[in-house]
Length: 403
Ligand SMILES: *Cc1c(COP(=O)(O)O)cnc(C)c1O
Image (tube, rainbow, N blue to C red; front, top):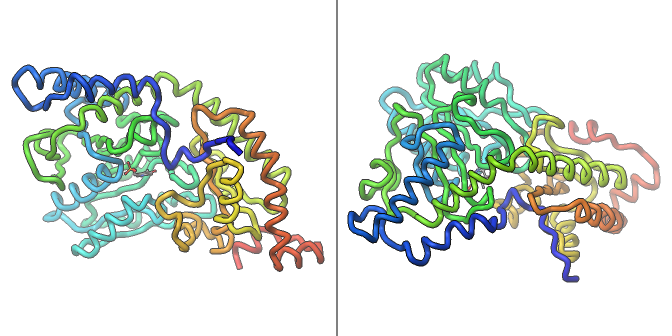
């Protein structure tokens, strides 16, 4: 089987050819240090300056409000620790959600050990937070709200602009992890009312190891990487020039192709979901049906072990994922799905298909054709499933998930 189908774009994306081409000169002739004042530094410096302008254009902010980092994770760390520590004399309370990416959740856990109080907002069965609960959890000690824009596991989109408005009313700084939103839905920091926003290169067809953080003018972040005067003293380290150029090119392409790409992804995603749900009984869609990014389908297959399902798909050359890439290989059920009220069994039976620009209808149809017999074979080995088959009972998901 030499067929290769990639349905795991929320884990990482291939580098776009135009991005690769834009980067090549900075691995070859333009190898200088952008901080150097001599001839070797001039080209790289100009490249970083232009890249900063492009990223700023993509986010609708000023170039001085963009900090280049090594990843989405570093952007999240810099935003959260940077604000928490710089505001420490004002308060020590942070508000986030239970369904954030580990880069946010584990940074908040770390801050708890450092004496901060963190409120983790829960989500409903659709994966949505309650804005009244958010409002009620703000105290005079709250200095930071950090809530993601789009969820990496389910694709659910949070009402970031409204959250930002609430934060602003209470004079609380607001950060959003927009790593999964970038390139899939518009990112305008002004419209989103956010003070800080994280993006990552490798989720938008740029290379791994580069990210950016928007920090609104006037918001202070203490550095987490101390060094030279890079990034206006906010992040030490000689710039990853090629990576930064790649990230900027990817932003440019994302903005240019967004409309067309979104329509393409939505069409394929809906075809995939409808196809699988029609052909396989006892499948549940996870996440709000409409409030989500267009490329992600998260489905629970009852009486099936997600990891074994993924291995079976892998044998056919189909790459998908259970939960997030960061937690796969662990036996813990997805914290996102469990927070939505799914039983551990149902969470373990879930698969995330995340589509990307090069996926085709034909690839989706291949999955729809190959997957039902796999699920049927796996279920035939499950004693629980045989009970269901024999009795013909209809185990509704509502019953299952609530018990
Ligand atoms: C991938 C991801 C990150 C981390 O980005 P890296 O560049 O891989 O460190 C953070 N948040 C979300 C929502 C992600 O999907």
